[in-house]
Structures are given as C-alpha cells and as structure tokens.
Image (tube, rainbow, N blue to C red; front, side, top):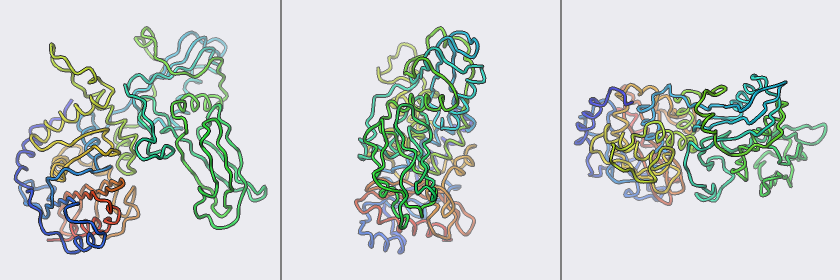
Length: 485
C-alpha cells in the first residue's frame, strides 16, 4: 500500500516542472578544468545542483539536465526509494521450511522443503541458523531429499559472463528466489610459517567439490597475491592453486563466485548440513513444495533482516544482485493485476522483471506526475539499457527528501570520505552520495550539505570513453556544491 504522502509529493512534482531547464549553464571553473584534463567534452556530462528543500528555487547548476544518460549503479536510488515507499523500511522476506512425514528417532521420514521467496541476504550465517532450526525439530537424518523451491521468481537462465566476461566476479551473480550467499565462496588464507603453508578455509563448504586445505607459502611482498596463487577455477568439481601464497600477506579473504552457479545452492546446503553433523539419505535437488503441503502451516519460517538493512548494503556497497532481488520483490509484493476483463501480457506476471518495471513505472507516475520516467532494465544499474535524466533523478531525490522515509534513504547512502564506496574519496564537503561505475560511465547522486547549512540535491553523470579519468571533475563539483553561493 502506498504511504499517505501521494497528494503532497504529486503536488511537489507538479511544482518542480519549472525548476530545471534544458539550457546548459556555464560550469564551475574547477569542474571545467578537470574535464579538460580528462579529455571529456562538456556534451558528455550531465550535472544538476538544486536546493533539496525549496522546489521553487532556481538550480545552482543545470547542465544538460534533461538528457537521458546511463547512470550505472546510481539507478539503485530509484529501486531503493520505490521499495521504501511501497513496502516500508520494516518489510521482511520470509523463507518457509516444510517437512513431509513424521520424525522418529531423529529421522525425518520424508522430504524437507526450503521455499525461497527472494530474500536478498540469505548469507552463510543465516543459512546455518536455518539448518540449526531444522535440527531443533529433532531432525538429525533426512530419509528423503532436501528440496529447494525457487519457483517464486520466473527468470530465464542467464550466463553470469554475458555482461563483461567476468563470471567469477561476485558482482555478476544472478538473481534467484533462493539466493544463498550470493552464489559465492569465501576463501580464507592463514599463513602457518612452521609448516610453510597457508591454511585455506572455504565458506560455505561445497559438497562434491575438491577443495585443497593448504597452499605453499612464498616469500616477497604481498602485492597481487591473487595472481601469485595462480588459482584455477575452470573445473567446478575442483579448485586448484598452481602458485604460492606470500607469507607477508598475513590473513586474507578472497570471495569468488562459484564456477557452476546452477548447482551452487544444492552443494552449499548439503555441505553445510553435513558440517553440522546432519545426514541425508536422499539428495539435494530443485523442485516445488507440493500444493497440499504448501496449503498448510510450515514447520517454521526464517525471516530476513528488515529491508532498511538490505538497502543499506545495496547503496553503501553497490550490491548488484541484492538490488535485483529487491527490484523483483517489488514485482511480487506490489504488482497490481489489471482490472477484470482486461488481459495482461502473457509475460507480465509476478516474479519477473516485466512485472517489476510495471510496478516502478506506476509508482513513478503517482509520485512524480508527468516527469520523464527512467528506462528500467533490472533495477541495479548493471545494464547498458537503463537511462535517466539528471532532472528526473533530482526531482525524485527532492520528493524523497520531504517523504517519511527520507532518513532511511539518506542513511543508506555512502558518506563521502567515511564509508562504503566513497570511503577513499578526499574532500572537505559533507555528502551522502550513491556512486555508479561501469566502463565508460561514472556517476554520483544524492545530498550535499553546504557550509551555510543548506542541503542540495546533486546529480553528476559522465558517459564517455574517458569517464574514469573524469572522477576529479565530479569531486570538484561536490566541493563546489558544498561551498556557499
């Protein structure tokens, strides 16, 4: 249900129509000089700096603000703002667990079912707690199978390498109704100088995968220890190290996406179940909860962390798969079917990206009136298709600033020079800004606190082959916005 701010925010959006013009203003000298050094032309950037609290104020800067641009991960602001508004910051995902058959002498005489419903943060420790709750039912052995139900999302199989050819990068993990630990393995390397090896721990343990317990220690600087290890992940059934681990590195953690994501959940669940001392006589397989069982009460329900914690991870650390999980959840939880007698397109059903796009576009119209809506793909910004104008994004941020969820949204954004993706950014200006980065794209958007105490909305998007070199120009824009007029 929509929060009771529709009339206020709709009126705000109407009042904003004259705030930003399409005319490109002169850029601040520091910004202009930094763009020149980066060899990025002015027509490859879009900038907006406007008062967050005064919709009638003329923008301090509006340069190509009505030009649609690829925002990269800044698009996560649209997804998280819509989710806060439509679902509320306390929303939680439920993962019900069903048992089939009776429990006798510690043995479940049937199958165990785990039904995923899109939880973006079913990480290792929470899966461990879920399986411990199974054991709390008195189950030590499962005579049947562990069945993983992923039917809540209706998604085609996607090659994680298709976006940038980096399938082992955790940021390329694909969404899943039962997303476990981001389909990744965390390897922990701990030097043992006495034995001249580094101990290697794998979390979660993956059933059926040969995982070397040690790797030889090497001398020299830590440097690029990952290259020094010469890891080979090509065989999903075996991880190999052809090199060594520099002892000078101390303890290091290396997260890597599993090479065969289609079997990851099965291997992770079985590996963790067995590590807890559990026994399985059948197998871990994909399937669905039988209708008769689903109609009854589950054995228990594992609840996620509140959504406000999820959006903090999404925005602070730009987590792509969590953003896509949230986007898909909007399609399940907030989708409104067409009126009776009106047929919906066959592909527009809860649990797919079409439904999610429809939900967010409807929300955008209700909140921002006729303001040009974004072009949505998967809601995470990990896309070459998504587009938004600086003006539209700025107006959304202005409307969010006067909404009941303003504090939750702002606190989810990286703080310049303090945390998240802006931790290493230097500057004197206090700012809460979402970052975006793809090849040929650099973006930043959010709120800047000026020395006068005035709060500004800032949007900066660069679409150019030299975008990465233009980061100093974006930094200069933030500093300029932070100074009094």
